[in-house]
Image 1: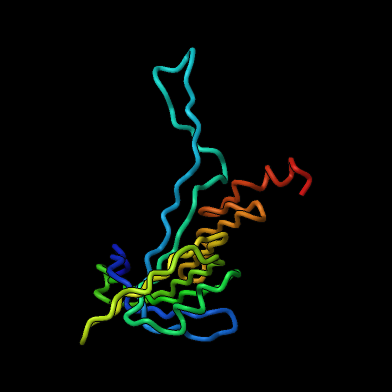
Image 2 (image 1 turned 45 degrees about the vertical axis):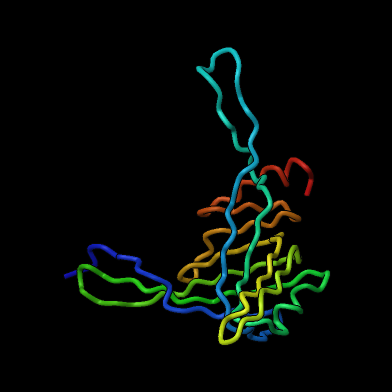
Length: 175
């Protein structure tokens, strides 16, 4: 029986690397929300209002790293410079047609700037819950070796599902 329904189940595991290949310590990551900047469209010929998104314009995008302990990796990310990170994951999927469980790679590349550092707390026999909040200026998501999203705020790139929505804007600006 061929593949009928791929059920994407969960992230099996992931690792975080800093540019240059150094692996960061154990942490949980909260990925950014992508919120488009909008302007209200209203007036004659419209039955109400529409919050019209502006192509390629997004609000602030934050990535949060939650550490188990206060460590050198958390403090290094507070340096006032850009930090290039790569998150490499493996997602589990179940093929309902064949009954097979397989994995596919997920890779997220980001360029970040430090925004906030929460050093956490000291309690015996407990995690410190140290946290870095980083502002994203760049993000690229690759699933199963296919680029599905790329937002580069400083280079006018806003690629989603095979379309760069800022290509015509770059052309209009002579870039």
